[in-house]
Figure (cartoon, helix red, strand yellow):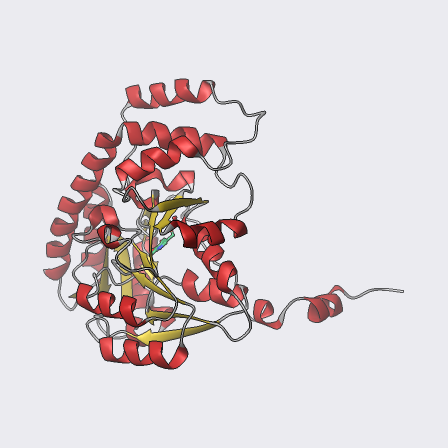
Length: 361
Ligand SMILES: Cc1ncc(COP(=O)(O)O)c(C=O)c1O
């Protein structure tokens, strides 16, 4: 008797999971990697030596501190979390998005976000069995405030996600519109500030003023993407509930020790992010000077641009052939038709990207 694995899968795997594609990360090979909003800089040798010396003392045979107390204190200071607000840590902010969804998920419940935006909001809604409602941004990627408020009233979402600045468009939404959403939304509003290190505004200082506001941060874009560490800040009553969905010991000992060490030497990271902000302006101006591109202003460490109609796929492939990997968003369609996104790299990487792009246009 043979048992067909496809029958078992057809019977047991939830239809909404079968309909999904796993989150795909392309192999960069030997390409210059400008696709994932990483900080391109390493640390000076003496700092690497001091970090390795610190790791020597980390007991790998013991479970980590389950709530990572010391790390929480360092993050609170580094990210200006108000003293009366709680902190919850995740294995990347991705994990915190999942924990938020798991906390409120029930049949018929909705997660709402403007679109295009960070794709994990939709994916995690689907995985947790929730509805996802996307409200289109305007042509210039600004919030369509009326449409969004109308959708909030109609859908009564359990959670609204606002990436501030938004990925992949790079812009900050109008702060007054965000405040109106905070007042009118019946459930949680998560202001996702993954790119705070590169942005000119933040809602961290507004925590406590709105009982339904939580602010999401990550150390990934500051230069610590390999550690997988995100932070959710907000009223302790909310965080205590979300904490119940957290798997024990989700922040491993190496991440706890390394992040604490890095935050003690934060000046190095701050100097790197300042350099990236300055190089963003140089890259923006150079892109604008190229023929046929529409380049969108950015408050993050990446820049979105639109190629001449029908050219995104071949420009993306041509860059790859010339050894530069960026992100092709054309396949998402809609407002991202003909769009590519490049992460701000080190100056030599940006130059190599621009030279390859110039040759292709
Ligand atoms: C808006 C936004 N939020 C969250 C994340 C996830 O960051 P991480 O899981 O590395 O903390 C990203 C990653 O690209 C993002 O763009």
